[in-house]
View 1: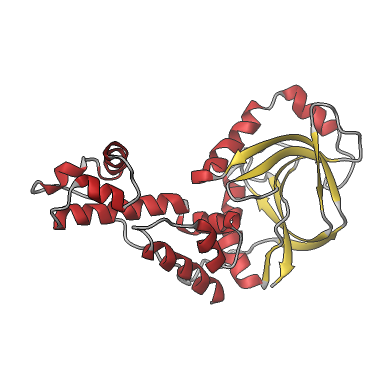
View 2: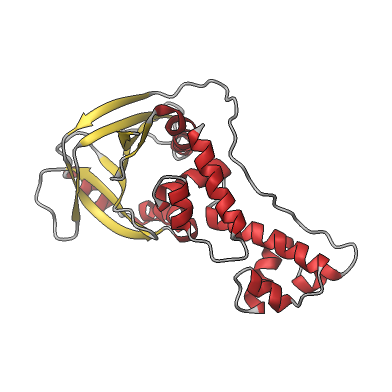
Length: 284
């Protein structure tokens, strides 16, 4: 499949440059997508971020070099992008559980993380419920925070934004809701190389309160996936299937504008809780 070839081409580029500077923009270009969506696809498919993969692979090769050469630790550290022995030793210790100097002792247990490859696999045939929806331009009003994407920090920070949102602020955002889709939503928008804007907002025509901001999303075609089950696990499972199963075989690609998570009323911990994922798409 074309998707598999592009992603494996990006892996080949990363592997060829483990001892050089790796440009994720170039890797994403090989995969024919933006940096953000390359990171998303990679993370869902490999269950680790690209930067984590690079770190594990470099530490694997560094261990081989330490075992099979007489090169100084500082030279091997520099080879794999570490400008100080301290930073290299810390990274090596986190992966292998021992210091680089200890590798040359006999009987030392090390960890090896092999090169990954993306392959076609036969799934269990579980259905995905989705619909295609044409929408005019949509306007959202709510709270915004710019979130770093470096090393997957967005996956850590976004849940905390919800935890830190006060009940009064949530209710204020909810009261602004007067358009479809209704209710309070989580929205990722304005994707740039190392950051994105995250909104907790409602679709609204109301005036923007002083403590909030607006987001206007262009008209276009959306694919809407239904998620059934307790949050956040049910939605995270659908996100993974979207990027690893639906997009590769759908004939569509991400249009590049905002992604929306819609949450229904009710108890999010219940097995029958319903939520939705909205993704802007265009034909390939």
